[in-house]
Image 1: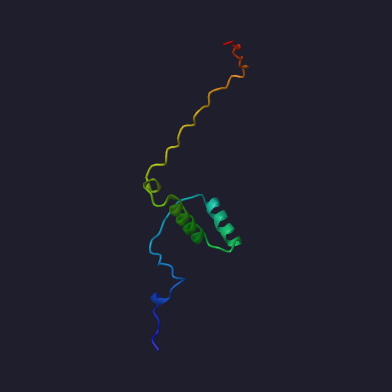
Image 2 (image 1 turned 135 degrees about the vertical axis):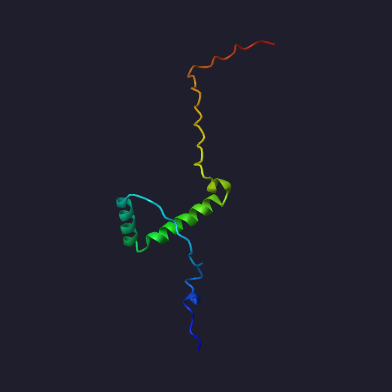
Length: 95
């Protein structure tokens, strides 16, 4: 019987993770996030990966999702005030 290599071990058909994302955040935020993940019986890395997959799916890989600049929000349109004056009926005309 041949021994399986460590590479042959598949974890639920997932692809091998071969990249890192390094980010900076407040220590208190990081600690609170890690603690919350532990309480929810998950890992911080798993939740961040889930967020990234959801974000990509939500934006469907469109250019806007990959734009280096933040999206510009449309300016709110002000509604014109409505006058509360009664409308007079036109006098009836005889034909």
